[in-house]
Image (tube, rainbow, N blue to C red; front, side, top):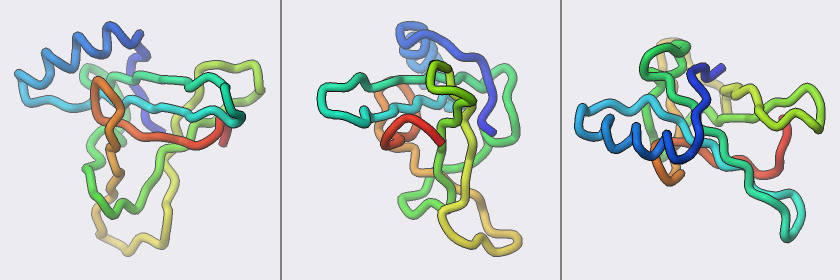
Length: 116
């Protein structure tokens, strides 16, 4: 799981500017695309800079072996838990990687639909 402090978008953008100056990048932005036309895109900003799981050390790749999946225990739960799932068999000793995507205000990922 990707763990850290959940912050508002304005705060995530402020922190990203600060982190860029310091050479840090542990801010994950997940955009969940709507399931239906005209639906709402959900955005979750997780800052793992001060406290987070080992998942914050997963590096970027254009050919990643992991994806971020939002998981909720019920449809009414807005804030998801962010699970990392393998997209293929990962060899022992192989580096774990994600495609950071282009979520505005930090590295992140995109998920189609809203559930895991």
